[in-house]
Image 1 (tube, rainbow, N blue to C red):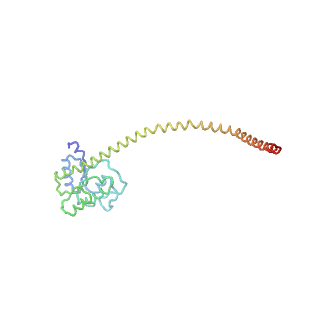
Image 2: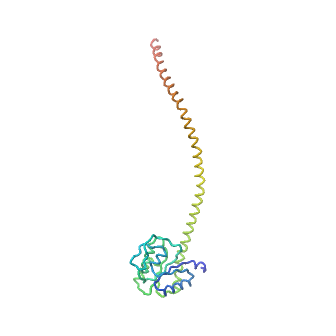
Image 3: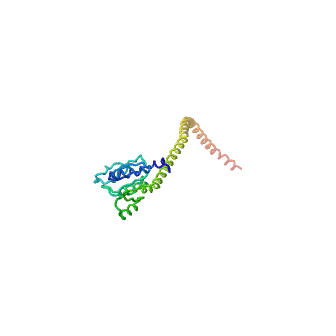
Length: 234
């Protein structure tokens, strides 16, 4: 994998410690990753556009507002476990509950080796659990996880572009037919009016014909006794 391909990976790093944020940022940059750092779980959610459902008692909490969507693609989130207000575990749950970001790999860091904590994070969907200080060898394990999200996003973009092209072709093909059908309707309307006039003119003649047929029926009925009389004389 070349440097140009690796530099496309974007990592969101979350840690309330300035020293740890700078440390993890330098390690990720050595791995040719683009890094965005924030100091709390609530700010991480703000960056992702997930603003709803945050506890208003949290001093770092965001005001509740409609969900917005991020413009920058994120291929991985790495977060500290112990943070005030919202822990790394809480952030993990928020991300995995989101339909838009649940596929983003989440990695938890902690300076404490607590097996129950590690198991709980992995069961909730964390890809890895690293003990601090994180090493460069640890971050190299993350590249396959980031590659999965990169390939998936590329496929979604290709599908979206294909659908837009197909919709454009269909719209271009249908539009002339709609215009032509409108012209046909406009041209037929005068003919329909002419037919109505002809039908109105023919109505008196048709009435006269009905009267003639009625009179002929009456005259025919009156002639029938003659044949009866002939039959009687014979």
